Length: 135
Image (cartoon, rainbow, N blue to C red; front, side, top):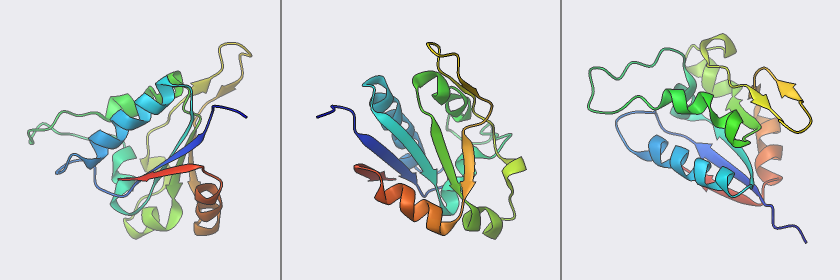
């Protein structure tokens, strides 16, 4: 029996104005640090968490967007974005940041682990997860 579990973190809220997005990111980093199989799914206003060029200069919140770009370094290999949520907000994959991933042992590389998925794909991904956290 493997000690590695499949964790899915579902992000539904905008990145700023509440602490949900920040708390999700902290929990993701903890899961990754313990070598769990970590995936993220961004839906509803959660898609704004990955939009390029976030500017928090007019708020009291720190811009934690650069941390998303480092998730590949922590072993996070999958970040999914709901296609319908993007479209409803006038966004496309081109509006999102890219996150690289590399396996230092095998030298396998992926240029961008941020993948846009439809509703059926999203349901399958969540169903295949052993632990699901929603923020």
